[in-house]
Length: 144
Image (cartoon, rainbow, N blue to C red; front, top):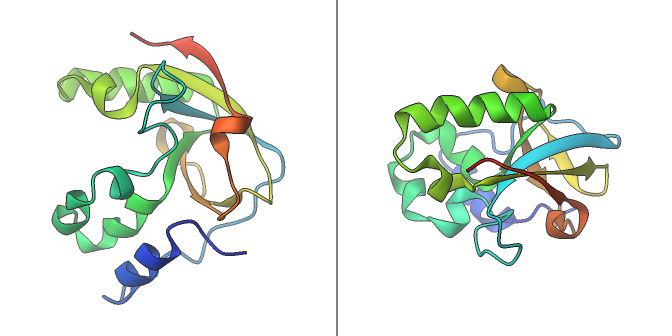
């Protein structure tokens, strides 16, 4: 299946960066959590940074550019909260960048490809064209 933002991902790969990375796998009904804004219609909800803020693609280190077209997710709600709390300490108004609410839902093989969870259970989701997390994820917990 084709990835969302396929054109942008191909452009990143032209500089010799493997995009998307080879180690991605297909999720099997994976419970995931994300940050969103409390307004379900907010323009940044479930949109990668490289799409809603394309100037970041030009300033980001070459090896990180690919991930600007993926969505940050977490396998554990507590991991997402720890991540939010940590970055809130160092990035002024972090909630205005990533959102002020945690949402959750299940990601399956039809939604895209995922990376291996790392620190704070964080992983990347490279969505397939038909994926609509807004329809699958529900707000769970307001952070601010």
